[in-house]
Image (cartoon, rainbow, N blue to C red; front, side, top):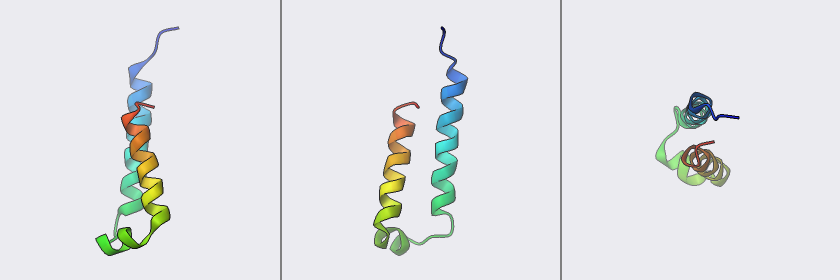
Length: 52
C-alpha cells in the first residue's frame, strides 16, 4: 500500500495547531512555570519532527 504524504502533512498540521492552541495568550513566565505544558509541547513537537 502506498503512503499518502498529504495524510502525514495533515497530522503534522494538526500537531502544530495543538501547539499554538496551548501557548496562545501565555507569557514566557507561564510557560517556564508549567512543567506539564513544557512536556506536552515537547511531545507535540517531537511528533511533528517524526512526520507522524
